[in-house]
Each structure stands twice: as C-alpha cells, then as structure tokens.
Image (cartoon, one colour):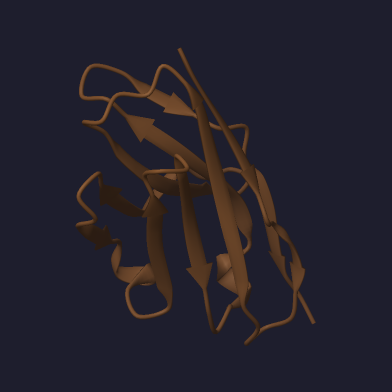
Length: 115
C-alpha cells in the first residue's frame, strides 16, 4: 500500500504563485510515475502533469509554461510549482503515484484563485 498526502493549497490572487507538495509513504517501488490531476465541481478530473522516476516530465496544454513538476526520490516527495495563476486554475488538485499495476491517489488539496 502507498499513502499520498498533498499540501500547499490555498487562496491566492490572480498572477500569484503556489507550490503544491505530495509526500508518499508505504511500499514505494522505484519504478513509478507521479503526477497531478485537478478537478472542479461538475467536471471530470483532468490531467495536469506527470514525472517519471528518472525526472522526465510532461504537461497538459493548459499547464505548459506556467506549471513545473519536480520530485525528490530520496524523500519520496513531488512538487508542483504554479506561477501566473489564473481564475481557471481553481480546482482540487490530486497527486497520484502509478506503479504500472496500480494507481494511488491523495485526498486532494484545494487551490482557489480569487481577487
């Protein structure tokens, strides 16, 4: 079993920045991909970004250029830096860890962009 815990969400003004973190614990294998999805009420959860164990990152189009994903394998943590926040970035952000045979999810952290 793997447990994931997000942190770093909150209320931020448009144009501001936020750094989300995800800490993994439990039976973590070295071959895994970690990433983020986000969800707003009434909509499906949408992919934001992911990063391989080796550090290869990929982003959804809305995240490219403003979001930066990173991870620290020694600490089993992952981060998502979000810059130039927009109203439409408001969502619950979920981190995940994919072992190839199973995907684990965190409980989510709320990001609200409001003036």
